[in-house]
Each structure stands twice: as C-alpha cells, then as structure tokens.
Length: 51
Image 1 (cartoon, rainbow, N blue to C red):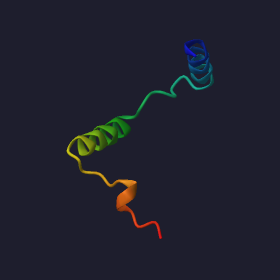
Image 2: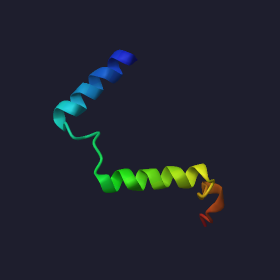
Image 3: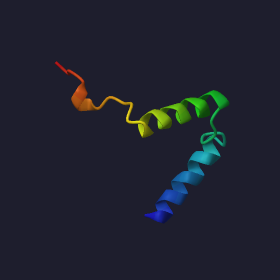
C-alpha cells in the first residue's frame, strides 16, 4: 500500500510539480476554514434540508 502511495505521489509531482503548493490566499482560506471547524462553526449534512 505504501509503495503504491509513493508511486502515485511521484507521478502526480512529475505531472505537476506545483500540485501540492498553495497560494497565500488559498493558505489563508484553509486556515480560516480550520479555525471555523475548531470553533464548531460549520454545517453538517444533517442540518441541510435536502428535499
């Protein structure tokens, strides 16, 4: 399993070396989302009226 993971990781990075890099705006949005989650400020799928 680990070997397959490493192979896929190498293939993705060879295809797009910047694949795992975030822009400063993306990093800020991710941090904001993580902070919201840590505070319990999120909506679960049970909270959504799917009808």
